[in-house]
Length: 77
Picture (cartoon, rainbow, N blue to C red):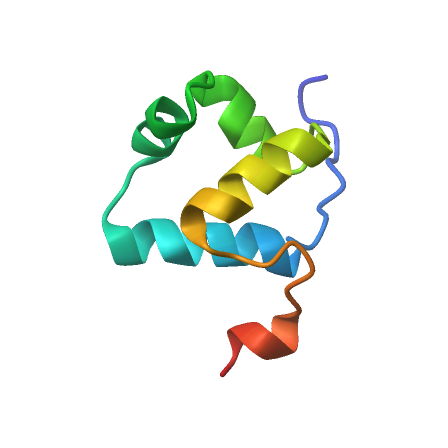
């Protein structure tokens, strides 16, 4: 729909933490996807929360050492 308004959702603390950790490690999303043996598109959808998969989120969290229940407050410390 050209010119239509899109609803913007606030990124979750988990999504922010993943992106922060990728920057710290100097990894691209493609690097993360390769390490997880998942498609680049699927990893992006998981991080942007367009797709929800407990198994996918856990795999990312385990690899990056990020708690699944991280809060915004934890990010600011």
